[in-house]
Image (cartoon, rainbow, N blue to C red):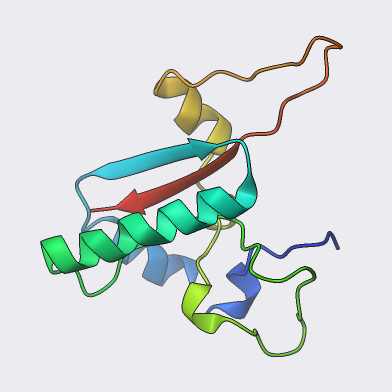
Length: 123
């Protein structure tokens, strides 16, 4: 296991429940950042605004959680109010999704992949 968990195993949401909820949304905001912490902070802020502005009782903000230096799993989550499922844990092909929107994979001068952190808020 890596340093961070995508939280999907910690959430009480089956794939069927996710697909049922996913079908109710019409618009998605895809977010890309170079760092995971800023990605998580911005995604959660957009999700909050969407909930307040659009009256949604639940929004999916899908981003790898980086709230802790090291995840407490399999113990209880330290920040359950920040827990969101990752896109790929629910069958969303991140590569195909971002490519279809014009995002590209970037490499540094030495040819190493530059990490990009993607998240999505559904409206």
